[in-house]
Image 1 (cartoon, rainbow, N blue to C red):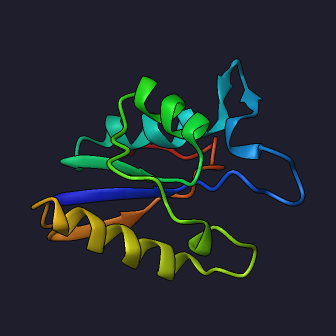
Image 2 (cartoon, rainbow, N blue to C red; image 1 turned 120 degrees about the vertical axis):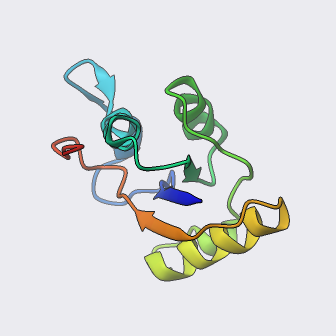
Amino acid sequence: MNIAIIPARFGSKRIKQKNIKKFLGKPIIFWSINAALKAKIFDKIIVSTDSKKIANIARKYKADVPFLRSKKLSGDHVGTAEVIIDAIKKIEKKNIIPKFVCCIYPASPLIKST
């Protein structure tokens, strides 16, 4: 199973709530989710977030949010690798076993699917 994981925490320091700010009329995370969907190479697109608001927006645009990330893994000094490893462990507990994992950053509105 090919999995895309989008790590989208709520507490951005430089640009408040950047992952859900509008860009061309859509929340910025939409563009990453949409590119992953259009690529047609992922069996699941999972958003790892600590925010119910981001989770609801991600679900609206057809991403899965099978868990909310812990506050411990949502701080300023937590690395992306820690977040991705945590997400993989959590989805494996739900019998979703990834063969390949791709990290797609949520604030990448210019990302292309091709």
